[in-house]
Structures are given as structure tokens and as C-alpha cells.
Amino acid sequence: MKLELERKSVWQIVDKKENDEIFAYGERYKNFLDSAKTERESCDFIIKKAIENGFISLEEAIKSEIKAGDKIYLNNKNKSAVLMIVGKDITEGMHIVGSHIDCPRLDLKQNPLYEDSEMAMFKTHYYGGIRKYQWPTIQLALHGFVVNSKGEKLNIIIGEDENDPIFYINDLLPHLGADQNKKTLAEGVTGESLNVIVGHSSFGIEDEKNPIKMSVLKYLNEKFGMIESDFQVAEFEIVPAAKARDVGFDRAMIAGHGHDDRICSYANLEAILEIKNPEITAVGLFVDKEEIGSVGNASMSAKFFENFVAEVLATRKNYSDILLRRAMAKSKVLSADVTAAIDPNHKEVMDDKNGAMSGFGVTMSKYTGARGKSGSNDANAEFIAELRDLFKENNVVWQTGELGKVDQGGGGTIAYILAEYGMEVVDMGTPMLSMHAPVELASKADAYMTKKAYKAFLG
Ligand code: MN
Ligand code: MN
Picture (cartoon, protein in one colour):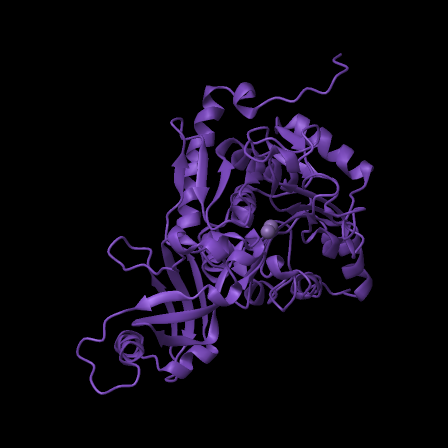
């Protein structure tokens, strides 16, 4: 028996067959990243896959008594989703994997369009914890949902097709950077300076105060039937225009927008779609607004999942509130969110004995939080011990991690929200680099092991 903890890379453990599976999984995951760059697009992708795989809507499902083997989905506001496969008895608890499908990005303000210095610009308001200096001088795409004044609902994507134009935030030239250079990284680029160039030519527009702005409005009206006031009711997001790409000679990593948390969300989706007749009810949660503190009615704090379970239980003849409480309290949860991996360029912020290593597998964080574990869920040893056995049985390569050195900072997930019901919850997700950057980096081995872990847990 080995006395010492062995830490080993996934690449050193898997056989040829599983190595091939890692790369095949990477291709499917990249397709998800490219197809779903906003929470709405992710929700749409997830619901479509669920329907293809025999899931029926909650409304349809509750028309008769729900039984083991039923596959049910909920589309909550087109921004979050629940997929459930019913087991023997829901009141015995559920196995839940909870991930989020919103990502840090720039949103357009409600009155975004103006003209300055011969350019038409959009004003933005960033969403989530971004590092502002990372957003200028990269190629950007626009993803939006508009209900125009004619009442038409439009999904607009510009900048993803290679024949599309892209959008751009300019930055100072080094020659004139003397004052900016003296500022801190946090202050060098301000929120109000993250204005996106969306037009330049005034050709063909005469006698106008803002001909370039007018030219943009003319385009939007001809193409989408939009008028300027439609921005007031629209949701537009600015994301990098880049597709997810392999990184390195060996193609073993992926650079892409939104690994946090689509890498766990996609693992969650594939895992639950592959589960057949679980003993314990299996649930995949895909929620919105995690990056801004789980607020709003599409977030984990909203009661849509609790209501979903109540609706399912209410199809029984003997429904009472206590059944719902039991179902929730006896449940077990993997809070599916990313964590920081040790960055070879910035090792000083991590404890190398406890930080997650890229390529060492899916990562369990017993606690997150900041300072003295403030805001943390701090999972119970009994539950983690169960998972250890489960992962051993299923050859899941996993490691422990934490979000940086004790005094360095910290972060949170949706773990604490589900714990409020009495559920056993632990953070279990993919380690990654450059978290919250426009384009983030993760290992294909870790992405694959994340899915393998979720599948073993769900059933
Ligand atoms: Mn996250
Ligand atoms: Mn995050």
C-alpha cells in the first residue's frame, strides 16, 4: 500500500483508447463553444439536445403521473434549464450536477449608440468580473436578442461568420501612453472607455447632425426592422469573435471564450444525455447569472428548480409539502464550476502543494470563498469520501484544488445556494487558466475527466 499521495497527469494514466476519446470529446465541446456563446444560445442548444434525446417538457410531463425513467426538461426564461431523468423515488433525494451558462462579457447599455470623431460607437456595461484592459484591440462579435417595435423577436449574431464584419475597442498607442502607463492595471482602462466601434462611413447620408450614427440606424432598420428605441428593450452582448481553437503542437488544450462555465455545462449535458434509467433521480442544472452573484429569476437563487420538483411530485395522489422537502434535503450535488489551475507565468498566487494542476483531472474544491473561507460551502468529509470511492470505481482521474493562496483573493459558486436545502454539495469542476479573460484556456484531459466524473455521479 502506498503511503504517500500520488499526483499524476491524466496523460500518464489513460490508455490509447481513452486518449482518443479525450480528443473526440474535445471536438464536440469546441462545437458547443462555437454554437453557444451566450446564456440564451446555450439554453437553446441544451433544450434542442434534450428534445432530440427524448426529453419532454415539464408541462407535457405533468399531464399524467410521473414514473421512473421519465425524461423531463424545463426551459426557464430561455436563460436557464433543468434536465431530469426520474429514478425510483424522488423523495429519496436526487443526484444533481449544477453548472452555469452565463460568462463574463460586455453588455450594451440601454441607450448605446452615439457618434464621435467620425466613428459610430456602442457604449457597454461589463457583466461579471472582467479585467478591463483585456478587451481593447481584439476582434469582437455582437450577439443580441431584440423585441422590435413591431413585436418581432429577433436573435442577431454578427461577427462569427468569416464573411461578417467584426467590432473593435481601440486603445492608446504606446507613444502616447505615458499617463496611462502610470495607472494600475485595474484603472488603466475604465468601464466607460470600453466603447465599441460599429461604424465609420457617412457615405450617402446628407444634412444630418450625426450622419454615421444615422447610417448605422439605417442599416439596423433595413436589416432587422429596428429603430433606436428598440435598444431600450434589447439584450446585446459583446464577445470575442474567435472560434475555439486547439492550442499547442499536440493540440491537447483549447483556447476559447466561456470555458467558465461552459466546460462544466457541456460535461453536464453530455453526462445526463448518456444516463439510462438511473436508480436515483438524475438532474442537470444549467443556470444563469452566476457571474453576478446568482441574482434574478434565471439564477440558482430563483425557485424554478424547487418548483419543478414540486410540480413533478404533485402528479402523485398523496402530494404534500413534506415530500418536496425530503426530496430536496436528501439530494447530493456536484456544484459544477471551474477552478484556477497553477499558471506557470504567475505561480506566486497559488500554493503549489494545493493548487490544481492542468491535466491532472477534474478538481474537487472542498471549499471556495475568501479570507477565512468566507462565503464558502465547505463540503462534508462523509460526502467527499463517498465520491472518492465512486471515482475510484469508475477510473475518474481527480485532484483537489483551491482558488489561490489563502490571502490572495477568492471566489464563489452556486454551491451554498443548494446547500441551504440541506443537500450535500461539493464543488467539482475543471481547472483552467486565464479565467474570465475574453479567451480562456483549458486542458482537453481535464474537460473529458469532468464529464466522466459527472456521468459516474449521475448514474
Ligand atoms: Mn463559474
Ligand atoms: Mn466565473
